[in-house]
Length: 332
Length: 274
Image (cartoon, chains in turn yellow, red):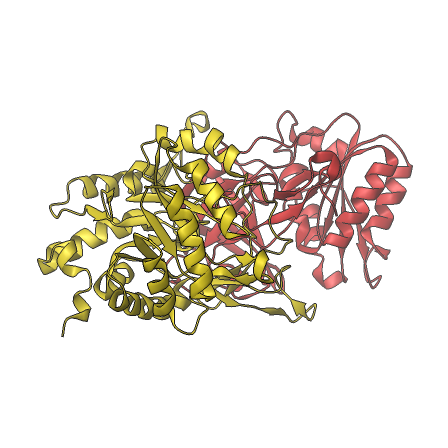
C-alpha cells in the first residue's frame, strides 16, 4: 500500500490496479464487442455521456479514452458559456438533479485545447452541440465538420429556443426537425439526435429527427425535476429546476428506448441511470445498439470499464452476439 | 494561488481503526491510510462512500481531511451527521471499510510571516486541524503551536468538540458561542476583529458557514492581511468533470465561476464573491 508520494502520477492503488485488470480482461474477451452505428465504428458499445466526463482529462488515468467505445464531450456552444448560478447539483433518491447551464469554453477553445488532446489519446470523439437558434447549431457544426478527430455529432435538443420564447427545441417535432436539418446541411459526419424525455410522445419527436436526416437517436436526456430546501424554504437549485439523472430514471429510459426502436429505423443509443452491465443489457435488449454511462461515474469512476467487461461476460454466457441481443426483447 | 492539487488522487478502500463520538452528532473516524496521509495537505478533501451502499445514497460525500498523522499512517475524518450520506459514514465503527477518492482539491497554502489565525465555525473547524498541528509544508509542530491561534465558534458549549480536540492536541484556541455558554458570548468573527487589531497577524485561514466566511474575508481585507477561505458547495464528481460545484469568482480574478472541487476548496478571499 505504501508508495513514494513523488510517484503519485495516477489514481493509485486499488483504482489503477483494478482499472488495469479490467482493461486486460476486456482486451482478452472472446466475444466481439465492436459495433457500427451509421458509419460510426466503435470498439465497444459503451460511451461516456455528455456532461459527466468533461473532455476526458479528469478520468483519463483510470479510463484511457481509447478504452471506451467513444467519449461524448461536454456540450459545446458557439460562444463560451459561464453556466447557471449555484447550487447546480443536489442528490435525490437514487439519483441527482443538475442545472449546470451548458458551462463550456466555446467551440474555438474546444478545437484549440480539448480536441487535440482527445485525438492524441486516440479517443473516438462524439461532440455534443447546443445552440439558441437552429442557425446557431448549423454554424457550430460547420466549425466542427472536417476537424481532425471528430467522429460524430450529438445534437442536444434539450435547450431553450430563443426564437420561440425559450421553448425547448426537443419538445416539438417541427423545431427538432429544424435543428437536425440545420446540422445535417453542414456535415457528412454521423448525426445523432439526443432526445429529451420531457414530452408526451417520444416516438413522434424521434420520427421527426429521423426524417430530418438524423443517423441515430440517443435518449434519454434528464427528466425535469426540482427539490425544495426545508431549511431555507426555497428551491435547492439556483436555477430552480434541473435535470434528474441516475438509477431513479432507468425504467423510464428503458421504456423510451423500446418505443423509439419500434418507431424508427435508425439505430438507438440508450442512456438513463445505467450503473452496471446488467443495466446496460436491459437497454440493449430493449433496442439500443450502444449505451452511454453518465452520473454513475461520479460514484464509481470505473463504471464504464466494468460495464464493457460485464457486457462481454453476458454475451459469452448467453451465446448471443451483440447484434442478436440488440432489441431481442422486442421479439414476438 | 493556493497550494497545487496533487497530480491525481488515489482511490482506495480504507479500514476504520477507531471511532470516537466527539459530541452528539459529530464523530472522529481514524482511517488506516498511510499513502493518503503522506499525500494529503491540510484543507484538501476526499470523496467518501460506504462500500456496497448501492444507488442510494447516490453520490459520494466530500469530507475534509481533518487530522493528518503521517507518522502513524492514518487520517482522521471529522464528520457531522447532516443527512443520510454523512449519517451512514459516521455510523462506521472500528473495522468497517470506507471507500475514499483523495486527496482532492487545493488545500491551505503555507503561512506568511507573523502569526496566523485559524477561524473555524461549527464543523468548519475540521480542516484547520491539519494546519494547526503543523502538517503544512515548512512548519514544524513547535512553530505551529507558537505562531498559530485557533478561533473556534459554535452555537453553544455542547457543540464545542473543536475546543476539546484543540486542548487534547495542545493547540492554543479562543472560543465564542452564540448563546454565551462558553467563551466569548457572540460571533467568532468578533474575536477575530479584536485579534486583527492587536497586529502582527500574517495570515487568516477560515472554514465555516458562508456568513462567517464573508465577514472573515472582509475583516482580513480591511486589515491588509492575506485571507484564505475554505468553501463548501454541493458537489457531484469531486474531480472537475461535472462542473456542479460552481462558486462566483470576483471580477478581479476573471469573473464567471470557479469550481470548488478543483479550484478550491480553499480560495484566497479576494478571488471569490462571498
